[in-house]
Image (tube, rainbow, N blue to C red; front, top):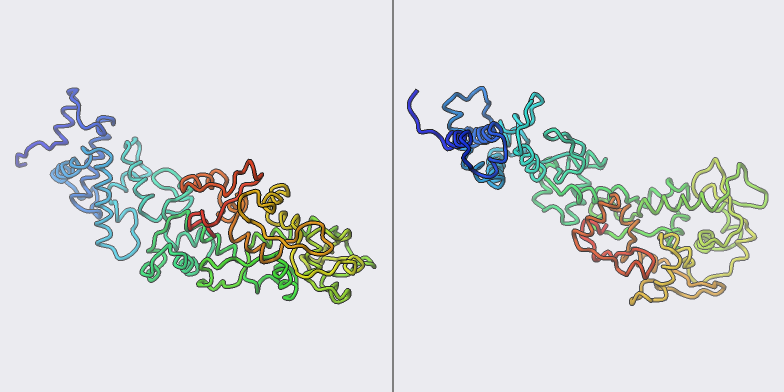
Length: 442
């Protein structure tokens, strides 16, 4: 073989054997780890991502060591620079989504091999982090020996598959919210990467949006009864937030629907058949000549002493009320609900709610009206919708973002979001939606 000058990598290894010090990052590893990482990184740099180890001879490995030394001698930042170069090369040669082996080649094949018996050193962790930052990763996927529970980046297609939503619907929602560009929206979902946490929040919003046309079936109620629930403010429409562009123009939050059904189970005693003195809620307004919004407001406001539900009939269709109690209702000039009922529907304690009404917070939060025959303030549907559009409790935000308490706290802290009012003074944790990051303001 022709004579050649020893490579810097060979000089480094000989120096290590003689006790000399070299680059700090390499010195922190075993000699074999440092040498192997440099060669593998250099092999991809010198011969490309499609090269296989069996294709390289002694001279090639020497050239690989020289190519890799320029980067590994610079420590972790040098290795990351080389990985960025891999990524750029892959983008120039591929018109589809980037994959791990075609991007990182021999380096990934080595570090991801199930037959790898020796610890390869810190380069595996650096490559893993680089993949998480730049490539499509699905939740629960195994990546270089560790499962990824919360990816950083996911393609729209992968996110849609894991969240159970249609890829095109999620793509339209992300576009409407400004999370992707018009150019991105023209590409297949597998080609476009988004921040995983943001994409998950948007997909949850799409899943939670229940079109009004579906409510009669979900609640076992007529369209008129659903309209009355909206009129009285027990259910409120989602503020658009771009959903009109994904064919969800008039919708309510699924969590509101669930809360309503749960409330019915709590206030209504189950019975197997209709008692003689009771009538179905759906017939009560016609029998008593009372408008349905008034009946619903009294029902959810706790004004009826006798409320029952048929065990075999779900939702509002099986609800039973006493016509005498309905006839005794004082006529009201407008729909709505009592303040205490509103607090309950919003998940706010009564003491905190009264502070909000009393404006002890320094700003008008709840607008109330006086209703003849009512001893407490009355909350109109408009006031209820206005509050939900401007404020959100920590618990509701946790449901909206579909994340656990520690994760939500971290996200709020990262964006320096503070409660709208002092929780110790108010007695509740309330946030202004205007203060939330775009991906949380659903």
